[in-house]
Every structure is written in structure tokens, then in C-alpha cells.
Image (cartoon, rainbow, N blue to C red; front, side, top):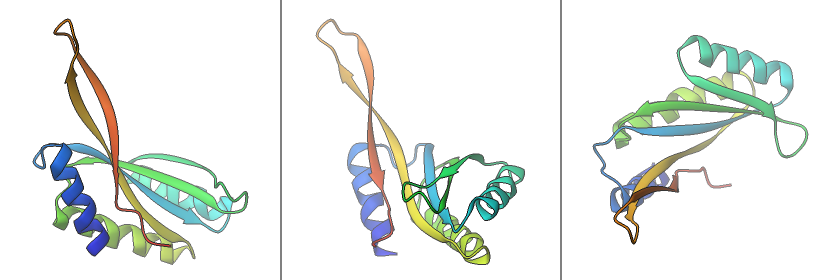
Length: 124
């Protein structure tokens, strides 16, 4: 998908493309029951999952985190899988983002980690 490709290009500009990153995916389900069902299914498959009421106060948000090297193929497989799971429960997959650790050298030579985010969010 073009949005995934563009986001991965941005990632390559700020991080080592071959490094393992934590990729966080967003799934929105129509209600708490379906959200909890999907969250449990993803936990059982070994993912780190958080679920809660969505910002709209109606839908249920499921955040799924996976550690991976974010290649176009891997992100494409992740998208396909999450789109299918969301559709099976009348929900929607809203894309992914990755936290990028960057290093800056402080005045005293001490290294400090900062964070940036690169997003492959679905248009909408």
C-alpha cells in the first residue's frame, strides 16, 4: 500500500531499516464485547495488546504491539492479517505506527534517547 511505503521511507530517513522496532497497530471494533474478543485472540497469538473505549466514546480500541523489522512485506502481512480480523468482527483496521529511538549527544558527551513516531495510518 502506498501509505505503508511512504511511512517506511520516512522511517529509513530516521532509523536503521534493518533494526527491530515496536510496531503498534490500531483496530477499532463496534463495541466492548467484540473489542475484548479480538484483544484476547491477539493476546493468545503472542501479541502485546491493550484495549479500551475509543476516543469517540462508542467504538472499542484494540492496540496490538509486535516487535519486528518493519519491511514492506512484513507490514503488508500485518495489515492483511489485522484487516481480516477487524472485518470478521465488523470493525476496522486503522493502520500502524512505530516508535523510533534516536540518539543525541549531550553537551557533556552523555547519550540520551529521544522518540519519534512514523505512522502508516489509513486515510480517512
